[in-house]
Length: 116
Length: 114
Image (cartoon, rainbow over the protein chains, first blue to last red):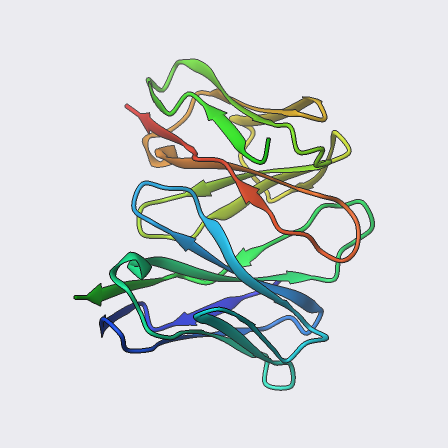
């Protein structure tokens, strides 16, 4: 089955600096890579996703890059703000089996702390 | 309505109790999921329902019994649980079909087994 590794496990940055989180996956059949943000005591919420036919995607201060050959993808947050403090999870999902739902395998998570 | 709701928010049960967790969505999604999340760990997939039929069971012990009575509701029936089953139980839903769609998560039920 799929295995997703995520680094670093904790990341402390100064407000205004950039944060980078990296993930690797093992299953070459994976073709959907979402990133979820989970604040303390809250539900995971999708912040950005990328599909295997795209190498990079950007949404305001957040960007994700995907290298299919190397099987890794990264999250970049620029101009970090205190409200960016949370746990971030990467995930991977294989090409969907017809009508079978969507199986997500999550990385171990990165606890990001943005210091004011 | 763009939310997944879950009840109860908190549940404390003994090892001999029977209880149920409930999940509801009104986004027209035909795939629904149960995840288990231990503290400081990622969500782990337990079950996937697609068109109200169980499509994935990640080798979950039989003391957890899922049920999807209709396209908006998902239940998780609990019986004879162990203390190590204490965790946050998250429900999620998504559309079915290609391309793969975002999973929307509910707020979770925090379960404590005594």
